[in-house]
Amino acid sequence: MSEVYCSTGSLTFRDRQFYLDGKPFTILSGAMHYFRVVPEYWKDRLMKIKACGLNTVETYVCWNLHEKYPNEFDFSGILDVRKFIRLAEEVGLYVIFRPGPYICAEWDFGGMPAWLLRDPEMKVRSNYKPYQDAVDRFFSQLIPLVSDLQNCLKLPEKSSGGPIIAFQVENEFGSYSKEYEHLKFIHETLVKYGAKELLLTSENPNGITNCPFYDRALPTANFPSMKVGAETFDLIRKWSPSFPLMVTEFWSGWFDHWTSTHKGLPLDDFAQTLTDILDAGSSVNMYMFHGGTNFGFMSGANRFPESTYKPDVSSYDYDAPLSEAGDVTAKYLKARDIIFEKILKPQGINSLPTIPPNTPKASYDSIEIKEYLSLDSILTYCNEKVESSKPINMENLQIHNGFGQNYGYILYRTTIGKGRTLRFEKQPTDRAQIFIDGIQNGVLDWREDSVEQEVNTDKENNTLDILVENHGRVNYIEIGESLLNEQRKGITGNVFLDDNLISNWTIVPMEFEGDFVQSVLHGNNWTSSFGKDIPVLCKTILTLKDTPKDTFLLLSEWGKGIVFINGFNLGRYWSEGPQRTLYVPAPILKTGDNQILIFEHQQIGKKVAFVKEPILK
Image 1: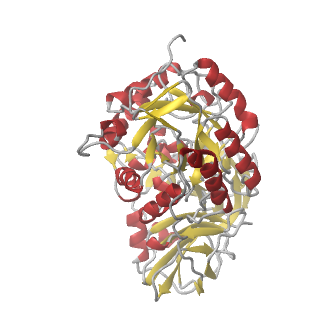
Image 2: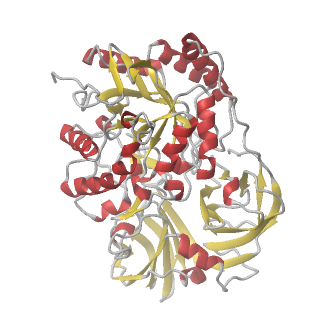
Image 3: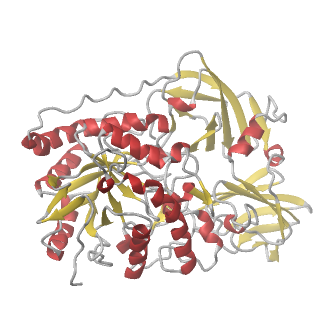
């Protein structure tokens, strides 16, 4: 590769140095994803990023929420990315824009929409034509939406332009593929729809040599420490004497998997690596600076080499400088000191903005569950039911104009006779609860490589229910493996009782989306008493007399499920941990009555509590 990339935007470089509008510039950035933070708190978090001495915010873009189904685009509310960028500009921050279309991010399917999996031949992150067409359609809506907010378009009268100084081309592509032509396609599509600012790639140490793209974009590094990042820096220096050093992802902490122990990055290690990066003359983006929350069903999963499927928790606290609730941490204060002493003070800057106060927190009295709704009653509110001779996975259901089910749960119901062993052709994905006549018989999930469950039915006409939970699609797989493994959710294959094929299924997608949640909340099938049968919907009310404050929902008696407050899906909980509480941002609460809806499918609790701080197992 003889040629090297040269930026024609407002952010340029030469001799290892960035220049912004012709002046030397060090990128001091923090990652924050608009789709993980309620919009009412965007400005607070951005102001805290600014007060730490940073000059830039970085964000990914979540294709799967912006285009829930083909040609159904949403850029409103928590997805109003243009408003987020404008707020960053108002606060005084530049923006690094990472539109994917694949983002990893511990986000379901790496941000790619589940409906791609409808195509049995789909090859994501490649030049497979249907994938290219889908990416082109999304970028045709996304890039023009923000293209006028590029810094290079600023006019003297400020009638145009904005804070965007860079776009990323794909994401850690070298860890997945060597298909240079696909990166070229993403690059050309970005440019076609209006990207004019600097283009960059970011790679972790495992992937940076697999698919070099430095003729069309600035190569940058992702790593947790200089011990593993030094070789990446050396390689970038070797490729061109012009390239500045940039760590697009300095991993400030780490994420957690369900059933594992809590992880993070010790403060001293964080401080040393940040110091080392700046001492090397590198720009930096702290990933994450503020992690936020995987609300709803959006947490992803990992499958590293020589390991099983590992689903991510709802919290994306990440042990970042700002906590999940946006609170300043010791890591934040340490980063602020280092940046001020090493970069800003030598530039003649003698003070930093005042740090905004943390949002107020509250604990509320425990409240008892008031009403219950059985599984059969829940199913009366599910409008979509599919009759089939064999099981069908979520993505292949003939619903939503033929594009299937994206998230949630799926119930398979049929009648079976006498038999001993239930056997699946393939293990259900991701967690299957098996019920005989309403009584749980067993559970199959990723922790045991089993496709069989003893049922021992001794009579004819037994109702078999199999409730399968989609626990999140894998967002990261290293090169040489198919990203589509384990991605299609539910039952993919036949089911047998002993050696007899089971047929005549009723399949019910349980998506728990807005209309369903509202109809259930206002339905008249609720009862004031209930046994121990699961799954079940539980309802209660939190009454607030004063202005709501941030809080954390604690379900210490409960087993596994999801929680809605005022129709807002907070995410998954599970007694296995390590996460034991769910973050409840004040803006989803209101003075007066707040409706709490819990879908529990392991162990019913009697009450819920609200505490001031998160709890880890």
